[in-house]
Image 1 (cartoon, helix red, strand yellow):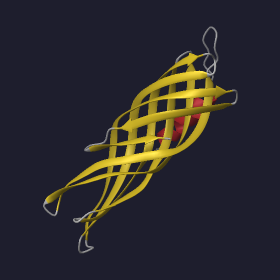
Image 2 (cartoon, rainbow, N blue to C red):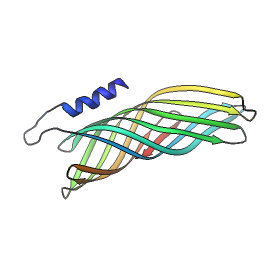
Image 3 (cartoon, rainbow, N blue to C red):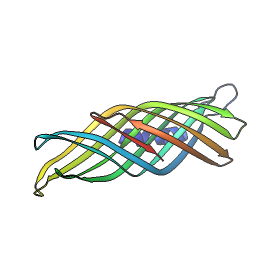
Image 4 (cartoon, rainbow, N blue to C red):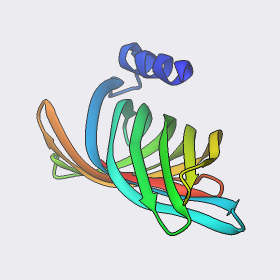
Length: 178
C-alpha cells in the first residue's frame, strides 16, 4: 500500500518532457457500483459463493504523455453480506493498483482509454452457519492482473470519466464502475 501512495505522489511531481509535451499529473476520485464475486469453497459440505454488489470508491493519480501513461490508486469495494440456507457471510475487499494506460483523444474534449496493470488487494471474509456459529474468518492477500476501459469528457480543469475495471482474484473477481 505504501508503494502505491508513493507512486501516486511521484506521478504528481515528476516533470519529464519530450520534444513537444510536458508530463502532466492528475489527481482524481470516484464513487460507483462495485461487485464481489468470490467462492469460499467447501463450507459445511457445500461450496459457498458470494456474488453481490455495493458502493465502491477510489482515489488515484495519473500521468500521460502523448497517448501513453501511468495510473496508480487505492480503492475500497465496501462490505457485502449474503444470507442463504447455509448461513450468513460477509466480505470486504480493498487494495491498491498500478496501471499502464493508453488514451485516444477526439475533438479535444472526448477521450477513450484502456488500461492494464496489477492489483494488490486484501479480502476479508466471515461466514456464520445456520446456528450462527462462526465457521470462517479469513483474510486473503492477493496480487493479480487488472484491466479497465472507459471514456472521458475534458471540460478544462474538470475531467469527467466513465469506466469499468476488473481485478481477477482467485477464485472469482472484483469489478467496479466508479
